[in-house]
Amino acid sequence: MRPAILSDPEQMLALVEKQKREGKRVGLVPTMGALHDGHLSLVHRCTEETDFTIVTIFVNPTQFGPGEDLDKYPRDLQQDTDLLSQFDVHAVFAPDVDTMYPPGASTSVMPADVAKPLEGALRPGHFEGVATIVLKLFQLIPADVAYFGQKDYQQTRVIQQMIEDFHLPIDMVVCPIVRDEDGLALSSRNSYLSTVQRQQAAGLSRALFHIRDLAGSGNLEAASLLKAASQILADASIDQIDYVALVDKRSLEPVQRVDENTIAIGAVRIGATRLIDNVLLAQ
Amino acid sequence: MRPAILSDPEQMLALVEKQKREGKRVGLVPTMGALHDGHLSLVHRCTEETDFTIVTIFVNPTQFGPGEDLDKYPRDLQQDTDLLSQFDVHAVFAPDVDTMYPPGASTSVMPADVAKPLEGALRPGHFEGVATIVLKLFQLIPADVAYFGQKDYQQTRVIQQMIEDFHLPIDMVVCPIVRDEDGLALSSRNSYLSTVQRQQAAGLSRALFHIRDLAGSGNLEAASLLKAASQILADASIDQIDYVALVDKRSLEPVQRVDENTIAIGAVRIGATRLIDNVLLAQ
Image (tube, rainbow over all chains, first blue to last red; front, top):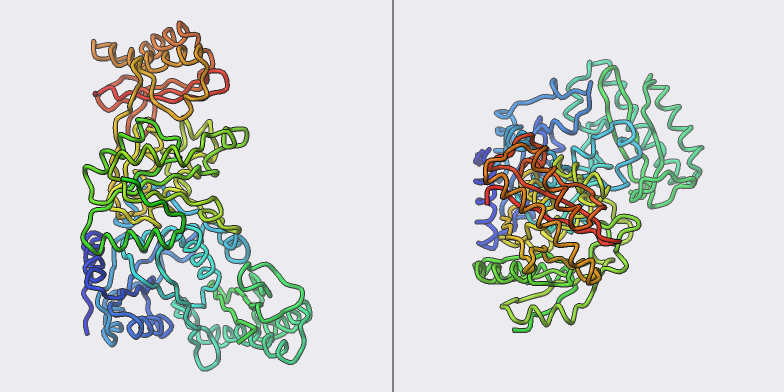
């Protein structure tokens, strides 16, 4: 079915409150649009588990740093809506920037300590932007449950911690990464890659899965696992490595020996395109 | 009637959600206890304007700075509950510190620019603590309307701005300052004052009302008005003046000439006791 498209916050809130008064379970899938099968897996799960599914499409400027790809980030509301029409999505909320950030708005969320390493260290202000927009969306769309993708793993930790710390009355579901056949995690930014770069890009997931396989065979020393991963990246001609790390899946602190609570997580740049990925070692 | 006293967040949220499902208008009065007639004026108004009144009593540690009066801040839940029993208060929420700040909780609210001058400049972190606890209370107690006192004027601006910036689905009512016969604004901290200090303390409101009276007679120059106020403070032997200022009531930026949007606002210390007050010039 074709979802209703809303851009007015008051209409959005009123629509959700009406559903809740009728006893419906409301689900939310926040996105920045440029939808791919990863997003659609969240949407599908939301429609399966709730009575009323809302997808938000908003390219949030405050989570992009200077020199990042805010301007070129792909935007196509028509195509996104077409894709969503395959599912029982009841409403799409697609506000404009001034609606979410009225002139003079300056209150923000200072995210939890878990926002500090990895992406937080490399993208100052990124998680402040993420946490702030997600809090706003949770207020305008007081859903029972929100769906996020594991690909942005640190983001899921930041948001989960915000939910706990602020006592936000919403549940969070983290859905598995959807990958292409060669293992590359789906991402809206994959569209930036040339054919050659696209082949290189698969090296990142290959490196992370290699860590998981070695750990499964009993090699639990982080230093040794990371060395093996860096060889895979080198073999794929990936030489701009922001980080590849083995960290506790809750605190995101580095570990010396991996266990079932460890996650292998990485960020690399292929040309001008930055890609992230992660693999839970317990899987 | 004697209110129910709750300390469990889940019970609190469930109770509010039940009222809302029944179509009741829910009102919230957040306090730090040590209730006086100023608080009770908020409570009274809330009971008049809503169907279900909740008063929170929580001495929020994160809004006290090092060396401030967190430890000696007056606490007497029994007496507070007795006072509230005069009104139709349905529930008192009095959580403990670990409930509101579980170990490891580290997400906070970075308040709006309006938090920067005046109290914000003198009490670093104060409004971050205020905004964070108020956001948490708004989540646990999703009321339709919350009541705050004008005495903490900058606080009301910080919270109003947070409500706007985060799109919080709650209305805010700011209630007038309640004063003793000599003009001193009621405050839980007045209990710290000796008899002599209590007489001195009235000088602060006298100075602010003097500004208002002079402005009403056509003296609109801020510098001249502030000079007149400082004479009144000197006459009252108030010599520890944190600030007395004439600022725009929305932005809290200083003004050169006062108008109907100006507020006279001050903070002084009498011995070890810090007192704040304000007077809207348009009143």
